[in-house]
Length: 480
Ligand code: F0G
Image (cartoon, rainbow, N blue to C red; front, top):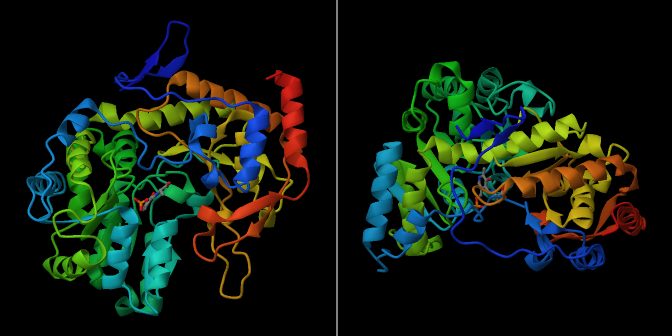
């Protein structure tokens, strides 16, 4: 485990890797940050990375690769059909998940697209432990509806509950009874539940969900994009699993589900995605769509180099030192911020440190996008780019009304093996300053609002000149 106690008594996470290749980053001055934020329409997605110091927008496609991954990329077999690279990746998935079939797809949402096309019909529901933005969009596009079946603890931002990503099994059964099993397209479990703060489910809970699916003849689909973090937490927090290896836990999870899909931008630390299953019927239906939407069956829209990197990345995910690095850094950040009274989601999850914007800027109503405003404010005072995970990330309803998010979070992703402890300490310092001056943060409104996934490309503006005032105070206090 990569957490050590220093003689001073302080506990720090220790990197079990060293950088061999580095990328230069720049900390541009506050005036440039003001200008950059203005140009980006107060949407962190539209910032240019040259203006960003620590890119904590996401862990997607930006995890550091290992030397072994880079070396494997040189072995890629670039043929349109039947490449050896495909066989290597297929075998790795078979070995790790115990699934016969592997369908490559260019990223996670491409898998969601194919699954929704095959399984969802208008009027059907998809119960889930918590939705993800792209998953929901694809299910809705196919005429279905996502129904949340999370446990009450899921939305308690401050908690000690170890498995906030668990499915509420009673709620799930009630949903199946209410709608009828034939109207349930599939049941979806998301590992490391993204939108509630990277929170895991337990193996015991997954087994209960499996029992229910078997009883009602339902398909159980696992979104394994954040599986690495979930594996770490099962090993660390679930008493019955302490003695199991990561490989054994992985296999126990895989044996309980019918379909596993993943974004390899997260799982496997590369770029791509795939669907694994033992269900012949589903495999045949999904396979038909693959050449139409993704590419031939042996590359699915991915570069073969990335496929080689995924195969090695999946193997590295079976290493406890590797998968605990992200969660340990996040735990450090969360604990240090808590000491400074900054509202953060607890217990610490995977993927990133989540600031509770609803409390941080409790003077802003949800209609003014508190998490979006906090994201812009943090960039202005630090050059750190986080991601809004709140009302801005929701879509309006059919009548055009705002759908207020359950949680207003600013996610500060910690890409695996990328940032150092001094980067994390800098982030803690600037977040603490911002918290002490939180009343200077004002609201935002859309000036250009796309209909689908508006948070990606939408442009906003401040409701008052608060950015200038905030930066003015920051410069006065820090003189930089
Ligand atoms: N499922 C989960 C749980 C995810 O976190 C993501 C992506 C996807 C599916 C879609 O995968 O990006 O490869 O198409 N999450 C990214 C994020 C976008 O920043 O959290 P993708």
